[in-house]
Image 1: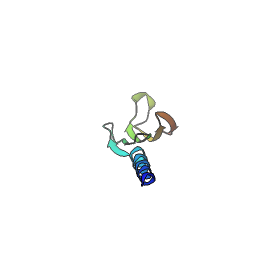
Image 2: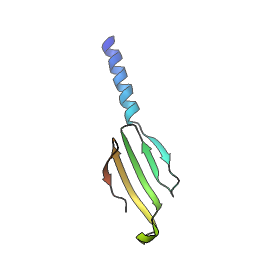
Image 3: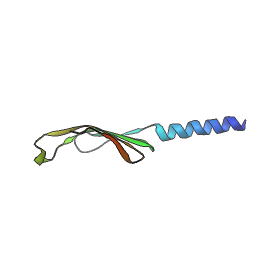
Image 4: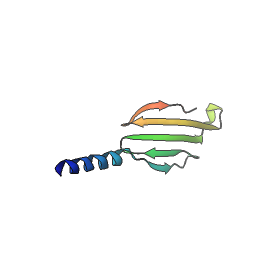
Length: 73
């Protein structure tokens, strides 16, 4: 019985840490999927004037606050 309770707590903890909550940012269309362990940003925002482009688009992935992937152009 005790082992079963430990397994249930571990499963609930894993679900709590890994299921993202989608948030829409007010920068032109960026969507952020945020969980406690990681963040994924689907970027679609206005580019700075000096870049010569209209929009920046791409994906940014952060795990434990450390950026592991960024292809925003």
